Figure (cartoon, each protein chain N blue to C red):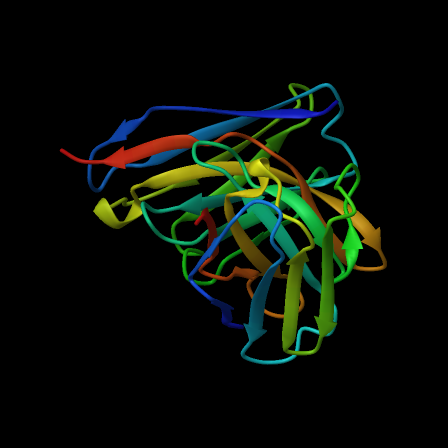
Length: 107
Length: 121
C-alpha cells in the first residue's frame, strides 16, 4: 500500500498570504495524484487532478505540481473560504490511499 | 447537476451488518465507476471499494472479507454492506463518483455529504 505523508499538519496563515502544502508518496505514483478540500460537515471537493490540472470551477489561485513521489499544492493568495483541510489522494497502485491532511487555519 | 445522497441506519450493533445506500440524482448511474469511502473521527479518508455500473467490483484488501458493494441501475442506486462490525467501523461513510481523466485515470468529482454510522450496543 502506498503511504501518502502530508506536511505540515497545520498551516497558520492570514488571508492574502500564500500557502504551500506538501504530499510525499512512499513510492512513485507518476502524476496520478489529486488534491481535495474538505470543510467541517461537508464532502470533499476535488481541486486538482493529474497532479497539476485544476478541476472544473476551481479558481486559478489553486495550483498543483510534482510527479513521482513529491507533490505540492499552492494557494497563491488565501481567501476566507480557503481555510479548510486539504488531502492528497493516489490511485496509481494498490488500494487507493489518502494523506492524513493539512489543516489551513486562520492565524 | 449530479448529486449523491447516502441513507441507512445511524446506529449498528457490534457483530451485525452495516448497510448503506447511495442514491444518484440529476444523472444516470450508467457508465460510471462509483465508490464508498469512510472517515473515522479525527482520521483520514479510507477507501472501501468501488463498483462499475455493470456490476464489476474492487475492494480494499483490508476490508475485502467483510464488504459487498452492489448496484441497482433501475433505481440509480448502489449499496454497501459491511459484516461483523466493531467499534472500529464507526465513521462517516461517503459515496462518490469517479470521472475519467483519460486512459485508466479516474478521480472523484462528486461526493455525498456522508452518513454517520456508530457501532455500539
